Image 1 (cartoon, rainbow, N blue to C red):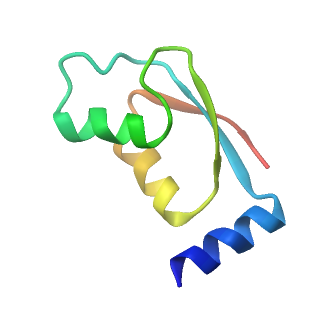
Image 2 (cartoon, rainbow, N blue to C red):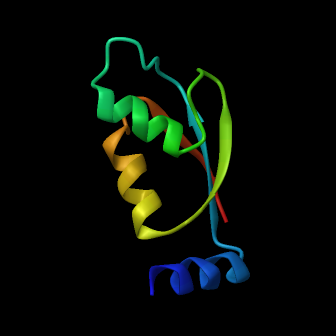
Image 3 (cartoon, helix red, strand yellow):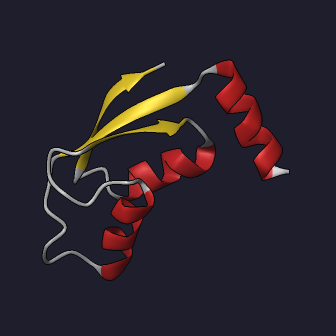
Length: 72
């Protein structure tokens, strides 16, 4: 059912752009893995992601390392 929700979000054009602002060095393993899951792992990288509750949770987990650039 979650894949149906993400397909609906993609069709509706709901996306969020996220930029990494902090380093993953000396961070907990799960935070580094979350950055990789968000298609980030270098400072300054920007990723455009589908705006779902799962993505929002990942962003919240590493909120001190990323910033939301744009919401569509």
